Image (cartoon, rainbow, N blue to C red; front, side):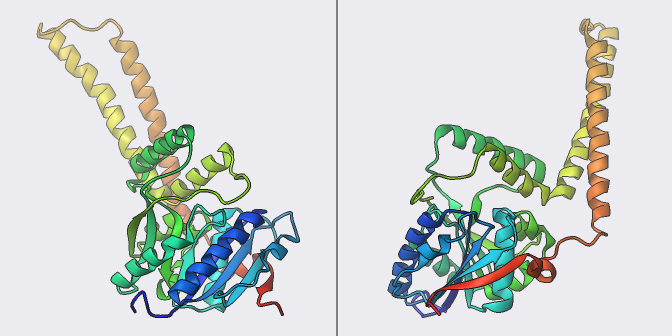
Length: 326
């Protein structure tokens, strides 16, 4: 299906009290849909917003949007879990050719959606297409923290962090996503962990349309740890290997130095004993922690966990149609 061919697209947008930004985003999304000739419907996932009348701000005379609905959750779940609920609802109730995921603050620009859909066509509609962040607009402190997180994520999981939520998924692959339990923790990480085919397109991140972000440092750390937790088994094994290598090095290096000193090749360091004891204890602690983490994750596979397809309805409080008005 070519990018110029009219198609049905469902947009899933989680929101928590960010209605003004979302209203502006929908106007831009409407303009893009009118230009592209899409049959576009929007599902806004209200993640337990405190402003109960916020959806009224979305009432506009849209030109191209066929429908705007607000899926109200029974409680606040967090951005990633709200996204999992919204995607599962679309899979069960609102079939479309493709499903696009974007945030409601405007940093995921609607004008870039044609690029993602064109890449989806290029792969024959058989891959999830993510926006790879070519450039970010945040401050220096955030970018430094993000660099540290990316490095830590790569070391612990072996997976590079280059994408966010902004993506397009063919409806056929959505059927695989809704039976991935890791979707409860992190959308993109769940796609990677489930080995769902994906591609990436370099796209610069936009700027917030209105208001201020409610994401603080604690939320950012929680979000990052949620992504890493999806790969808990990989993290445990990598720490196990690191602890084993560290313990071996803490014993072999002093032994090599002692043999070299006996042969007269060098003098034995005075603090060698203390260094050996400290490194050996640290390595043993790392080994024990890695073993506990690994066995905990592996044993947890036998337990029933959250499954989006089976459990999403427990969190849905209702659906409100905003456009067209009933």
